[in-house]
Length: 105
Image (cartoon, rainbow, N blue to C red):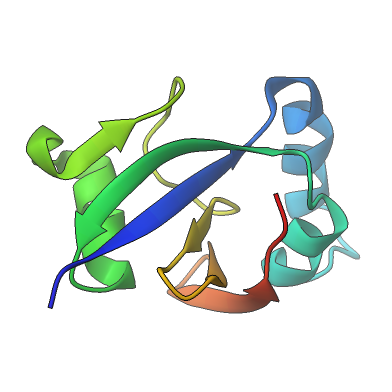
């Protein structure tokens, strides 16, 4: 059943540091990193989808009719945060998703 998912991407002024930390040798998991940078993300879109995989697909290939854009958005990638209708957040990981829990923005 389709639901609305909020998509958050890191603010431009923090993007360089965030991206650099994603690839550090001693890096935390992407879920830990997203929590560390919590409050520094923008709600860029709301996507109507069936599940997280479907959000990822729509965020990368459409259809555009399933996306409501709130700010400039790049395709979904590692480190982006997806929040479901119940407020449960997951971050896009290298393979699949990692649960972040509650994600305050």
